[in-house]
Image (cartoon, rainbow, N blue to C red):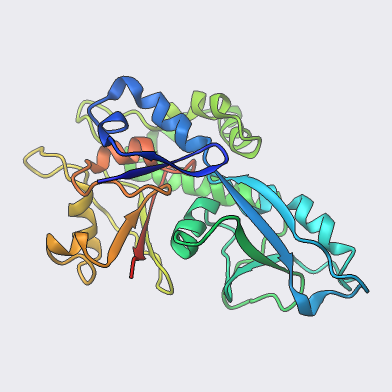
Length: 297
């Protein structure tokens, strides 16, 4: 089975030998974390045609953005560039759309791509809007403070699931700030100097519960309690998780090789990968494992 790893400015780096990045090579764990952190997506931003108020139509704006980040943290340049071509005198909020689907700013960029466009050609082409904000589909984002608040709330929720909140509550305010600044400024070492403490586990050698969110296009996100080990102490696998949480899609062993793909961080991990290892290495900076079920037909 081919494993695709997002690195640098490329969409995929073909890593056909999963063992290089699998749970049996713990000495290379930092390499896994670094490869995923460095994942980038080239994006082409186009101003909605019906919102152009100038005589000339603006050229697209191109950016190479981190998969781990959020659109409000990287799109300032896009907003400044397109505003002069619009009649947005009221300072209306910018929002993004892909093929008619408004994109949720509080989802990591990599999750949005994997969920809606994982089979599309690059650069990923998005439409920029300043009008007709879809109130029934998107949350308002008044600024980067809202992103920070959402991010830290997710980190705290994840730690409650993993450690009953004991790790995050034991940190100082400056540690929380360092986590946020590491993400905002795309500083791997700054972020992981703090985040490694959130990935530690006690004598049980696993988290209490697995922080995960499972997505399907046009359906609500699924989140529920899931133990990474059985009562007998055996590791639970990715296949166990998706069959339990999405039985309508993966209700038999054969279904996992059918019309659906399980995508995490742009990668299709083998179904036999332990979820504890995935949580420690493939979680996004908010400490959640974001799992996308993508119809491959």
